[in-house]
Length: 308
Image (tube, rainbow, N blue to C red):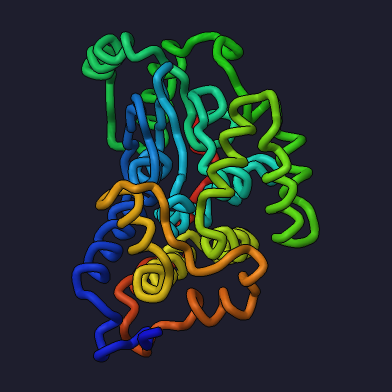
């Protein structure tokens, strides 16, 4: 494989610039000094989920489907996925990352990825109500004002299917097993499940890149350590390595360019060792080449962002 510092430039300038700008935007949303409302309607995956999660007031509608399906393209859940997936209840975040499982609105709130379940038909009513509020210069007051408007338009909880909540204990038990190989085998054993959500998750894991599974497992074991800024810095160098050394380009070819949906992955789960993960994805950046070094590690970031 190429050196991480190939040509002294960490590979493609486009790749470096893309991830730097994306992660800076996400970090800015997490730390923005004013309330930010995000309206999540329809498919919200990958980078879109990173934008939603970073906002202070996060709405999901009846059509919302949230997922981090990067394992299907030989990548990993970035945009602070290492941070927010690790903070989902039990080990459900690891299951969601390994399987690309789709979460509806009520599961999204249960998982701390969103704050409010509101029908899409209420959007204009809410926007009109926000124009009538007495805003001031206090962040605290404005958080409460926005939260009260949103809270007043929520639907009754329990109105929709919630497979993550229903199967949370099961998937947490599977993902708490002592080794990646045991977790992998346990999820694959769900293929004959009568539940379509569990069955689909098992099939997506089987079709995804085993190297991504190993990387996801390693990253989420680190997710509880360090600040959000530290996580973005970690993900930046992992993302660069994923493009340079991993199977990201093969996944893109198979699913997006040629669309044959037959990626030719370079390894099975048996060949995914901690040593290989460390050498392939977790190499430190060359001195002075971390563009996110200026992110403030001391900023405070709540795990759940609901104000009522």
